[in-house]
Length: 403
Ligand code: PMP
Image 1 (tube, protein in one colour):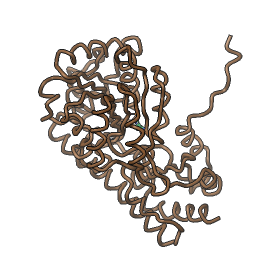
Image 2 (cartoon, protein in one colour):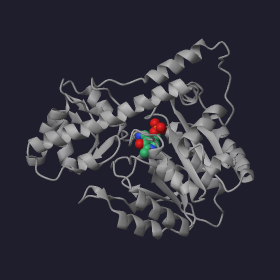
Image 3 (cartoon, protein in one colour):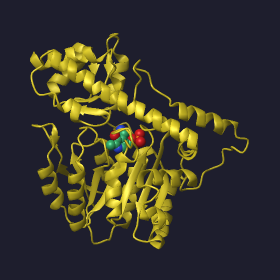
Image 4 (cartoon, helix red, strand yellow):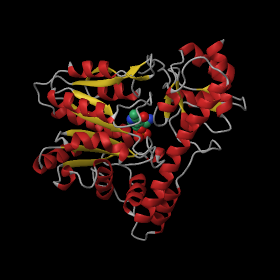
């Protein structure tokens, strides 16, 4: 009955890791996946996470009962407070409905479904995504019934932000459209708006009657500071806008496979937030009934215990700083080799990724000739580099750019 099923293409990002795994060359590098690696190229389990995990296992009250549909309430409270700030009026007035989600992806999916069901009937379901954006955004919103449109974002000439293009496209969005924004450390470009540009975007979103949907997958990974990285969301919040927020603890707590995330919907009043929460549960129940407990229990402990919290922040700063130092090492190596072009964008871009502007052909050369595995849009994960491997990458880039 399903003999007619066609072979689906491999996922462009997950496929990079598969190809890297299958590559027998000892010099091979995996710069595809957005996961933090140590200087030794190894995955990193945070000390705060290990300690929290031990505490959970040692707790005699621990059990494996189902969580509520909306997840671990303590995790939800701490997660939204981490993003929105303990002093925010929305938190103080209990205007935020939060459900635990299957990491950032699940939060986006539940959020998109909720909006699809509950935006006013008269409004067409349209979402505006940055061009380019994380590949999964399009499918997530399309699956929830949204028409997907793009706004200009990356300027290939400057390898920075095309802010005029962005404002023009967002201003032209019909009222009620969903505006997806990367809260910080934009993936794949590493290019974020400045504080002044965020203020302008806020005005455009407000006057256009748009629904801001923040995707916050990298809080703390941009600057090393959790509060600083939440500035964009808090700016919109304090201006009194209703908004939607997807959070992931995959990167900033290294909980990738634990699928710890949260979806928050900020409403105008507490009464509305209560009704919204009841509807979010109706979205979750037929999808997966209730979320997994272990990752959320870890994250709740790490956020809630002052000692673990301090340790986490220190480790998070360390990860962000190591990535930043890789930008400098790579830049210096490229300049030392006189590779043509202005490479200062490597230093200016933010977060886990650098968007190099290399052509598809150049990327293919990197893979086949140099065993440097990356997505063919020219994105490299700075977190996959080390002081030992950056010179090799610079040599490889120099070769494919000049030959
Ligand atoms: N949004 C963006 C922009 C991302 O880069 C990612 C991870 N690559 C996610 C959301 C979701 O990741 P996860 O589901 O692992 O939390």
